[in-house]
Image (cartoon, rainbow, N blue to C red; front, side):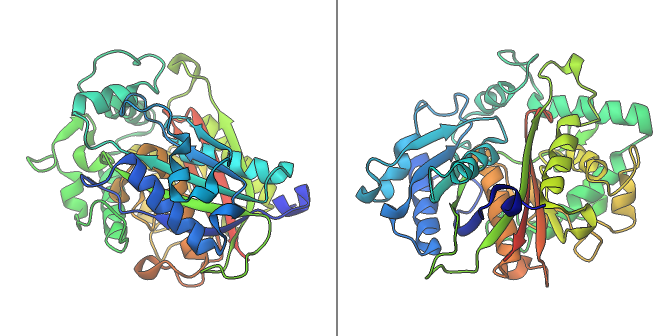
Length: 395
């Protein structure tokens, strides 16, 4: 049973926009939001006056003084005056949280066209401010000082994994190199730099240890950027591309205190993954690609196991047998992932859906996977605390 069969209506990704990711010194949060929102509306074939509701995914967490950004999208056009607009926050999953709120408005029948935006401005802030903002998503570390930030938290996960299953140093280097290679084909990516497996596996002056065992190449960068998508219940005449159908979606939250979570289980991600695939009526073998939340390479490794590409503790198999490469069983992060594409926190979930939609509409350019028809998107907030998964497919 698909979403359409369950709820009696379609949810279509009908138009989208995406900014470059990186250090965008000439852009503001407002200019990024307006740019991608305008591009998404134009691509959808709709007019601004046709948008029934707006959701903005933005973490902020003190990165910017303005904590009330929901109406910035109305700057696109005076025709948006009066349109309900809501900011949605769920840490690094804020973009997918905004998208699912838009989906639920369509399913409730209160809207027929929803504009979803994800945006974040981060690179202007000192490292200490960025670190403190991100640590606001952790139960134990919020409000404390840390030299390693969220890298230290995921290093704890990596060490727990190593204690249980053995060293991960080499496989993490392979994941980083894969995603850097994929990012070379993504015009929006922050890091356009081919890095060898050997470089990514080796600690050096250019690749220092950030939080043992995570090196710089194991960590996603601090980024500015935005992405937007228009969701509709029916195809729109005049849209720039064929629409992409949402076939299934799910959200699951785990406990916030670390003491109540198995650090390597990613239990919330398992629940969201299984829920979305069940709603779509598919299995992992029915997918052509996946965009997953590789904020740190250890996260992608564990997600191979969450997705069922390898048994628990043996995620390295998915890299070693080539399953997750472009020509493998399930290519993962053809966009370069957060690792190479960048991670402007509130934008990430929407960006993942946009690049998946590009693949399924045949408009991904050099990133294009020939014949791609169905994809999964995984986005998470905190250390696998809030997990969102979507299954999208060609119409």
